[in-house]
Image (cartoon, rainbow, N blue to C red):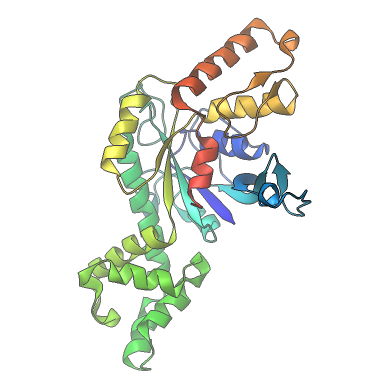
Length: 317
């Protein structure tokens, strides 16, 4: 299983990646800190049958803790996108090629609105995160459209001259994106304008098909990051209103990373997705660290969790 982290630059994607995997990656407060994709292993929680069957298991490719199995998932963090990346702006969208095999995408959004369209810092609330979601959807659609258009003449020729099945031809061209015949049929069935001969589709029809195909084949979860900033709360409600067909999960990647690192050092007891943590070595903490943990505890009391684990698991629900 593969999950892809996408979003514009400087919204916390790589912090999210590090918090999920504890893999080393360069984190920076400047655009395009990530150039080459970061890859690591995260885990999703699945109820283990050991408790129901009253047995003690010994899984080979996962870990079972208190009746919960932690199943490994590959997580890929690619370079941030900017509007019109498909036209070559920023670093372009060629980095999305690293996500061809992804089962779905986690779009990390700066819910506080404190980064502009190009990933530069701005005053909290100055940027509308709704616009960030829309532009990224568009960039992914254009990326997928570009892949399909490379072989479009062959698809048309196959239908018209060789009398081949159009659905089969489309599916064959898209297998590299982990797209199946079922996804192709679902996309065509979603829009009336696509229910005609495939070789008669216009450019607009092709884009419409890819939009529906993206929805059917690559589920996207919105990780509304930076909930520790006041402006985020109002923006999260706006995101939920604007994207009612999507899962919007409030997140604090920074808080999750801090908790994971503290747990790794044995300072606290914490598992990803927990609603609270327990300090084990308070005597080893300085005042700054104690204050940091107090703020994270307040955040957990308000939001229920850091949201990072929930965002990752939402792709597979």
